[in-house]
Image (tube, rainbow, N blue to C red; front, side):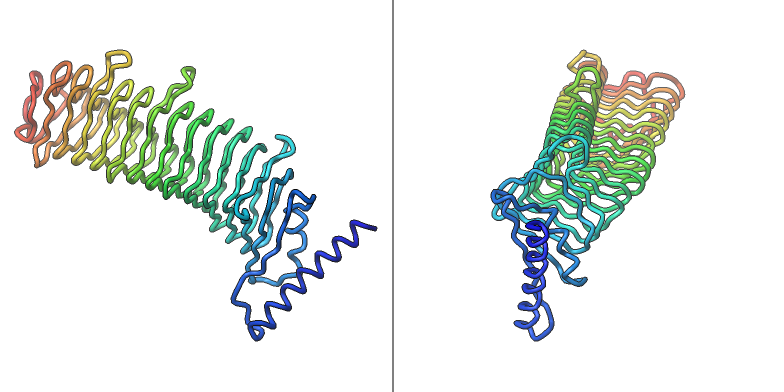
Length: 389
């Protein structure tokens, strides 16, 4: 009886808040309805969400949360914001379910610390999920899991996920922006598969067990003014800073791809990559690895100090029908060759000239007669086995 009375009272309060707001605006609501949940008093987010049937669509609702709630949360109404006041936490009771499941459009999670669960946040086919100034941590599997829908992170951190930091599949889109961080995941920091699309802007992907960014099976990624560093921390997995397989990537605007266990950027299996105004430095194996018919275009990049983990890496390794175009770049201080071409690969140098001097071996090496170099005069460095095509 007590629970029924409390539920009825909550519904009446919600209706009362709505009626008051309508009266104050002459019947036209201009501000969202706000409900308060005080976790320290035994109130729950789920109970507040259960009262939203009293508020007609499309009126937006803000659930203002105080303290720490121990519960699983499912959001099935459009235009709902969970807001920490000024910050709050939701912790999974166990790992058996996803912590926050979003089944509705226009949802915002802000000023929250979300800990545990199978997935930390699960986006089920929904548009306009925003995660602002929040921390998602300690999930058993993925920190954020996006199926088909769209998710945008601003100033948020995803850390210590037991699977991927962020996973997007079947056309799911994710933006990681404004000083967001994805770190210390057991698998890749960011993984997109089956036509997924990522934008990473002004953010850091670091210290993950496998690849920092993994684009797979016709996915796309734009990495803009971001740092991809120290990935491949698990020696049983290894990993590249950015790994592009049968997909497309653009890396630009002062991005730093540094100190990853294996390649800085791997472009594999017919993938296409544009690398502009970026720094690829100190990676354990090759700086840029183009393998099995990729197309790579590079402008104004610095590729240096790569390949010293096993003393066998190149600045750029381009083999098996690899197509490479370079202009105005610096390729120096790499363990073996600056640029290595082999097995039907081709390289076009464009102006301004690329400086390839100061590597451990030849600055440019052509491994066989099937390799082609065009405009060799726009390259500065040793090239004992390459002739102009």
